[in-house]
Length: 235
Image 1: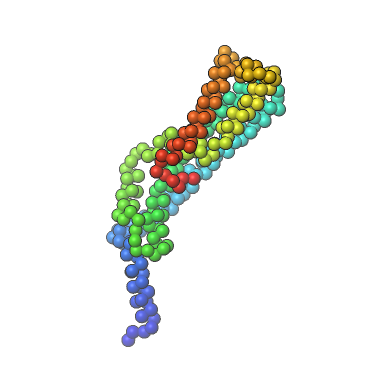
Image 2: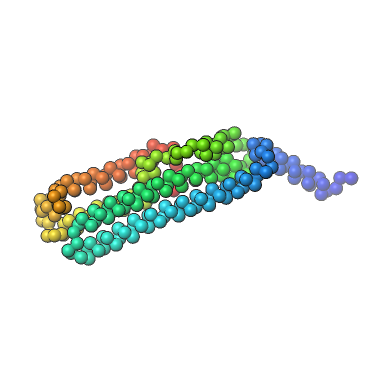
């Protein structure tokens, strides 16, 4: 005799079967692989989170060092403007380190996003259609087979500059100009300003042009390169 509970169970199972048709690829995997996929996703999320925290560390270094050096430079009139130039180079060094970390973070994030978009999203929505059918496993496998990180160093530098350093570098440049204006003697003319900007045997105008050109080039790269990339959801 068929009970009401049996009917409810059968209807429930039929509904599940209809909503999970899109998991054909996953169902065809050996049962032992289910735990592997689960633990793999957890591991990738953990690694992604650790690399994301490393990005914040280098950004904090840049802000703290800039604040300390600029404050020290303006509170001590005898401090030469060259210390701000040193600060500029240090921040570039921190940006390079952060860009390297960002490349690996991006790779891990891409892997987790593939699983989230192609698998988890469909599970939670209970849809039968799949995005990029039969391609999500191939994308993951390709990321394992490729020994190099697809994102270039220039692209990673441009992304990090655009997100975190876009206002920091111009701030350093403005601080340097203010220091040059005041030290060693207040400049009243452009010639006096360029004379104050002199460092050792390097003419002041050359330092000014190189400094300004590097800032403008960095801003242009930060605005242009990310527009040419296929990645639109990076942090």
